[in-house]
Length: 149
Ligand SMILES: CC(C)(COP(=O)(O)OP(=O)(O)OC[C@H]1O[C@@H](n2cnc3c(N)ncnc32)[C@H](O)[C@@H]1OP(=O)(O)O)[C@@H](O)C(=O)NCCC(=O)NCCS
Image (cartoon, rainbow, N blue to C red; front, side, top):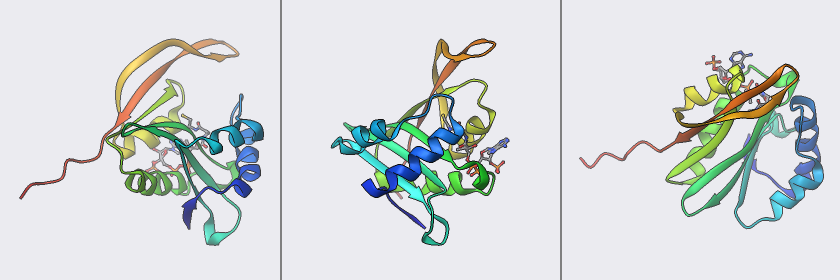
């Protein structure tokens, strides 16, 4: 089941963030984000139970910034993120979605490529790693043009 994120979901989302990111969004960060008028967020909760996957956007002027997305560790590799993001991209009805992803984040790059995101830029040395810094890729998604026939 896919639905919009409610304030009551923010604890569960903070837990997933803390489990998968080295520098996670805290519950406080999530509350601040959720209160912004530009915020849209969706989650996937299998059988309507505990959230397994989520995506957070800030939307302005027809362009959505994908702020964060993740799937809880135990629920990964089941197609949840692909299903959630595909449905979310349909629901937000924007002209473009932008995001930043580390060049070494193979799983996320596979996900975004599968959704049709394309590289439009690069920020050198953007993310810190124990062994040094890695670039961020800037990716953009645009909806398929509607046929005029
Ligand atoms: C990236 C992430 C959200 C994918 O979530 P998921 O629910 O496991 O993804 P799905 O099962 O829907 O897989 C979608 C695609 O992602 C890629 N992918 C997912 N897990 C992968 C893995 N372990 N190895 C390689 N590719 C992987 C594949 O391209 C996959 O498509 P495929 O199954 O047709 O090969 C998840 O790995 C995650 O939470 N990672 C940590 C947080 C993160 O990096 N978020 C993105 C920040 S930019």
